[in-house]
Image 1: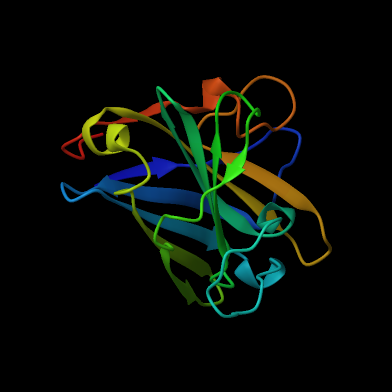
Image 2: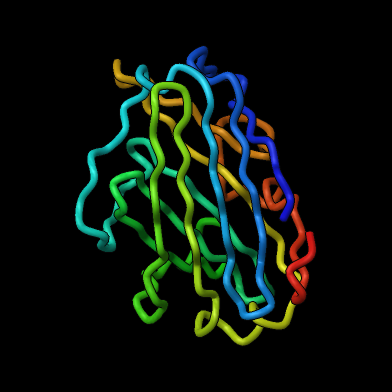
Length: 183
């Protein structure tokens, strides 16, 4: 398991967050395990209340943790909300040919929260999305949208593309995961 730092986009700083990391592991049985950890003044963040785990669109409008997996047939976008709501999309190419993925098992999401730390774990079963994902080296982009209590949004990523925040941009797919789960 590797720990990856996320940094705020220069145009959207957030003084409340002291440190933001993601631990990443792809298991040999096709599960992508992500452990997002936000440290700082968590009380100043707007955290969606727990709800029934269900597929929901538009999660990125509020605090939402994201992962993007690129392969030869396009890329997948995974959204995980602290509420336990989630979404999975497939794109044929950069921001084009979007489709909602319904056949995949829902991710398992758990939340840990105290005054100084927010932790969100997401377990994604990649089996069934594409046979290519199970056997290929994948490019991974990790990101998050963080909403403050006053409604301000900050955009976090391991690697930001030039210009405005854009988690879909190919430059953001800077991490590699091979079929054995090595980074």
